[in-house]
Image 1 (cartoon, rainbow, N blue to C red):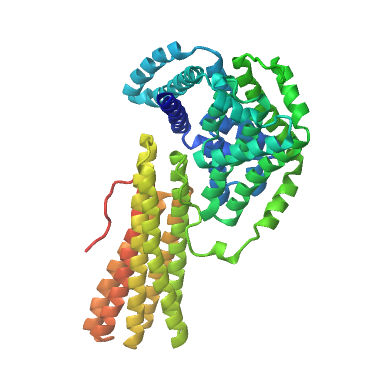
Image 2: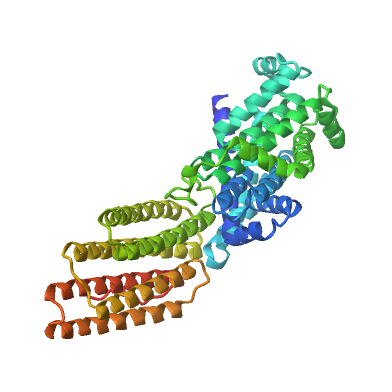
Length: 560
């Protein structure tokens, strides 16, 4: 019996692994396409539901789809109302898993998986088709696990185990207290296992073995529907307010469904049984049909729940906004698009890092503005406050590089496509160069502070040169931000870099001539040259960011 139990747990582990491999392979084949689908097909509540269904069917995981949706809300790519409709569709799409499992419990498919394994391994060896091979490999693993699970369930022969039968028989299936208890058990077990598919497989084993009545099994399925929402809510803990609201909407959607289902539980279940041709009160049932009853109920429940609530999406949006109010701290200077723990969709996690890198660039542009304002400040108190602000932003740039880099390192440990690996390398270089911009701007602010402390006065010509350099630097960084967002032009950035380099050389030569003529002291000239040189160095870091984004290979642009 102990060996059989381990065999049962091993089958469930293989089932989860097969679904994971299949899901990741589909994501690699789709790539950014899933993101574009979510963005383009959520124009209204009905297309949003359809989109959620399609994406969930594609990745074979409602939890992954919901986490993905929460991530896009966090990145402001989807509104809260759009996200709610997508989540509703994902709940319908996830019912496909139940039908696949029913097929595995109904037909002897063990002999069919071996040719699929062979074809999958062959395709994996070919670079062009390896993702298709991964998908078939995961699919074969999943069906192999289902076939073995079915056999193991029969070997356990739980229907003739007096202890097990007596335990479940002690619960009256005609009592609502029993139904509530099994809903609670299903929810808790799903929260622990973090996989509704695994609990669905166990439920099918218990029902087809004759241990659980169909009412008890369906109560477990209802509990699994609530338990599976925990994944998205945990993922959203470190996200912004809108993302937490989207995750809460998923929980409320399923809880509401369970509540109204309880009012019509027995008639609804009996209807599902009649559709499949099963008598819920019969002592002897066809095991294959019981698994189809579970799948039928799962689909009917989620479709009906969606048909009811799709008309109340605005009200659901208001409710979650009321439960989770906006906080000022949500808009603080911190990571906004990356949330710890979201690794179920590594291909799409790279997009999260990309959005965070774009925000990193925006913050460096803000730091440049603060630094340039520092140059014009006359009051001592205002100067010190602004200087402290620039120093704080430089420290934040160090933290941003560390946190985004650490996140990308975690994503890079997953199985990624070559294109996504290339994006990870590019992003790592981008954040490194952005952090260098922060260092350079802080050095520029220190040079400005040195000019102030030494009471160095620039001539009108020097002031004009500084203004021209600052203007070029601001324009170069503005174009860098456009490039990071995918709308800029690399050639424009290269032109700005050449102009900054030429201006640096002209101002440096003019400074040497002016010092020789005695127009100002050598110490003033040194501060002036240091300021101009730091601006030029910042310009080099800016073009490095652009080339990292565009795939340029000019290498480090810094000059001695």
